Structure formats: C-alpha cells, structure tokens
Image (cartoon, rainbow over all chains, first blue to last red; front, side, top):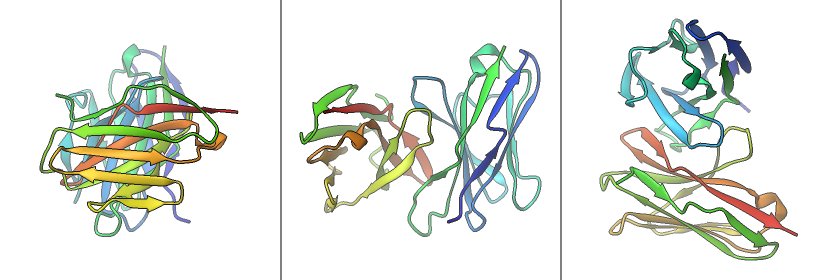
Length: 114
Length: 108
C-alpha cells in the first residue's frame, strides 16, 4: 500500500539553527500539507501546496517557514532560526481530492529545539 | 468562533458502552467532513467520511447536519481498542482543518 514517508523521524537542534524536514507524498497525489502538533495539543494546519505553489497558509506559517517541492517526489518544510516553541511533531500529508478526499499522513518528524 | 470545535472530553466509558462525540464548524461553505482517529504519539488516520445522509461502518455511525453546521460520531459497543483521540476534520476547498480532538478511554 502506498504511503507518505517522512525523514528524519526525530531531530534535535539548537535554538537558532535551520532545520529541513522531508516528506515523500504518495506518487499520484496532487495536494500536500504540513501540520504540526505540540505535545498534548491539537493538530494545527501550517500550509497546503498545490500545483507547485502554496494554496493556503495559517498564521503560524510566518517568514520563518518555507516549503519547497525541489523535484517530482520530495516536499520539504524548512524552519529558519528555530525557536524553543517550534518543538513539536510535524506531520506531512497528501491527498488526491478527485478520489476520496482522504488525507494520508506520514508518521511525523519530531523536532526538539534546545 | 473556532473553525472546528469539539467536545473537550475526556470521555471515560466502560467496555460495551455507547458514546457520542459532537463537532461544530464555522464555515457554512465547507464541502466535506471526516472523522479521524489518532493514537498516542501516532499520526491521524481516517476513521470515516461523513455523508449528508448519514453513514454507518460497523459500530460507528456518523451524522451531518448542514443547517446546524454540526457533525456527530456514535460508537456502539465500545472496545478497549477504541481508546484514542477522535478528530473532527472539515474540508473547505481542499483546506482541511482539524478540531482539537476528543479523548476517549474505554475501560474494562
């Protein structure tokens, strides 16, 4: 069964460092998303991406964040100058809304900022 | 008003109980609706879509009331394995927004 894969599964970084989280969405999907979940809190929308551009972004997704689809398979989230409050689980998801509308999530990348 | 609002929970029920979760959404133009399940420290996974006429999948029944902007999930004969957080998800133009989730614990 096709799945969304994310790397790394866990990253520890120092405050102020840049982090890149990588995702490989399901190959025939057209819509890609990043969500984050701070421990014990809700799943928060960050950004959606379609047709090689951002289609929606939340107020959380400020200039510190950027997304890129550098090739036909990877979808990356870059966090510049990480802050302590960026510590969270970051989930990538993809969907082909022409079919079921279901979001398929990766297992997440846990980011710990020290 | 929050975009997607759910019962805060937690719900602690005995095995075999029936439990219902509610969810309201603020955007009347929302097109599709889902219930997801999230186990502790895991990714959310689709439990079921919610259709206008209501739909059932085994012990799970989902209802949608567009006029009241309200979605529900009913779990009958709850099992220990149903213990999880249940997330209401609302789609508006491919923008999928999550409720805060309702935590369910089923006890022996």
